[in-house]
Amino acid sequence: MVTTTKRLDELAPVLALGLMSGTSLDGVDAALIRTDGAQQIETLGSLTLPYSPVLREQIRAVLGSETYSDSVTSAERALTLAHIEAVKKLLAKEAVETSKVHIIGFHGHTLMHRPEVGRTWQFGDATLLAEQTDIDVVANFREADVAAGGEGAPLAPAFHAALSDKLERPIAILNIGGVANVTWIGADETLLSFDTGPGNALIDDWIFAREGRTQDVDGRLALTGNVDEAVLRELLSLPYFDRPPPKSLDRNAFDVGLIQSLTNADGAVTLTAFTAASIALGERYFPNPPSRWIVTGGGRLNPVLMAALSERLGAPIEQVESVGWNGDALEAQAFAYLAVRSLRQLPLTYPGTTGVANPTRGGRLFKAVS
Image 1 (tube, rainbow, N blue to C red):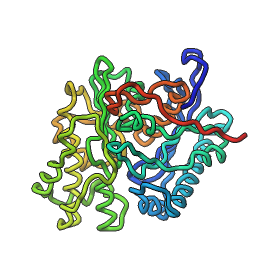
Image 2: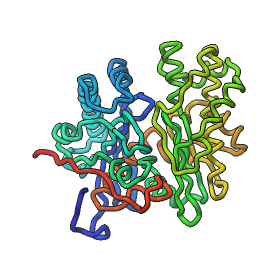
Image 3: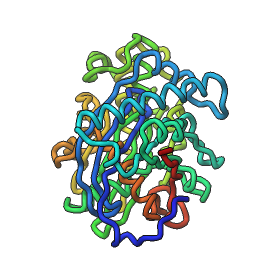
C-alpha cells in the first residue's frame, strides 16, 4: 500500500495521467487531469490509441486466462508497449514535459474477474511502464478490495461523485463499455454502483464472429433486424439480474449460445435489446429514481442502443457531453484521479460501490528508475 506522511489538506493538486484499456478491445484511452484526489478536478487533454488488429487478437486470445503462459506474457508486453506509446503521444500532443506529470494511473486489461472466488486479474507490466516513461505508476487498483471481500468493480464511482458534485441529485451515470455499469448518486451523497449486465462486448463479438468487423457501427446491422423476444426473455432470466447489488461481471459471463440460430441482423438487434433491457432492470435497485441519466462509454455512440434504452427506461437519456464531460476520456480520467487518491491514502471503494465491508484504499506504487 502506498504511504505518505503529509495530510491531504497540505497537498496541492497535481498533474496525473490515466490509462484505460476497456473490455471492448478498441484501444488505449489516455487522459491528463489536475487533481487533489478529492473535490478539485481539472480535466485536460486526452487521446485514444486504437489497437492494431494483431494486438487486438493477441489480447482476445488470452481473455479468461488464469495464469501466465508464453502467449499471455507476449500479449502483456505488447499491451504495455501500446500504453507507453499512448503516454508519449499524449504528452507530445499537449506539450507537457515528463517531469511535470506526478503519477500515472494504469488499469491494465482485465483477463479474468471472479470476485466470488477472490480473484481478479488485470494484466500489464507496470514496472516496464514506469521505466519507459520515467513517471511513477499506480496499478493493481482492484486487488485490495477483492482481498477484503469486495467485488473489485466498478471503480469509477468516487470519480463520478466528485465530477458531478454540482449536478442535480439523484443522478445515474451509466457507462456502456464492454460491460455496462451504473453509478447512482443520491442527494445525500449516497453511492450505489454495480455492473448492470452486458455492454458492447457481446454485440462486438457477434459482429466479429459473423462478419469479421470489430463493431456494429451506428447500430446499422441491428437496425435491419428483428428482436427475437423468446431468446431475449431467456437471456433476461439469468440469475445475475435478480441478484441485489453491489455486483460485478466478467466480460465472458454470458453464454450467447441461444442466439446462434439467428441471422446476423436479428442476433445484433437481440443483443442490443439485451444490453438495454438489462440496464433497465437495474433501475429497480435504486433507492429513488434519478433526475437524469447521463451515458458515457462507446455505447453512447450507438443510436439504436440509445433509442432502445430510452424506450425501456421511459425516461430521457443524454450523452455525458451534454454536461461538458468527454465520454471518450472519462474512464482514463477516473484512473488518473484514483492514482492520486491511492497516493494520498484515500478510499477507492465503498460498501455501496463494491460491497466491501468498509471504505477501502487500494493501488500499488511502481517507482520510475531515475
